[in-house]
Image (cartoon, rainbow, N blue to C red):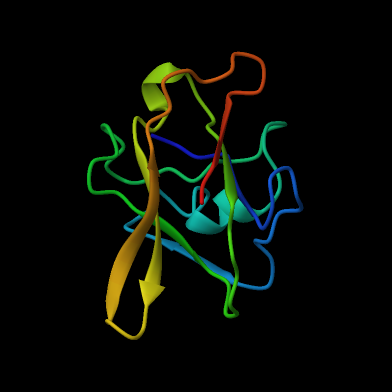
Length: 126
């Protein structure tokens, strides 16, 4: 599994809200394929995607972005960097609720068809 770009938008087709924060993940394959690569607004052209060190099918793998500010996200656009075998099969969008000290699933998506031209999947949530 690899993610070349992840954009989180406050509105459908709106601007990417991933700026000024910090990216982290379960792990990374190497120093060139860090979580920040998924949020750098660069994909293709020789740029490295984020790749976990156990890229089998991504089960139990997570990638997160801490905005360091309140944000409401209504759309997520994922761009993967390889062939269909490296694309995520399911994605949970979660947020941390400090009141309950737990992660809450905001919405789940199971991309059934990745576009062939841009290798992207866009999903809108609540």
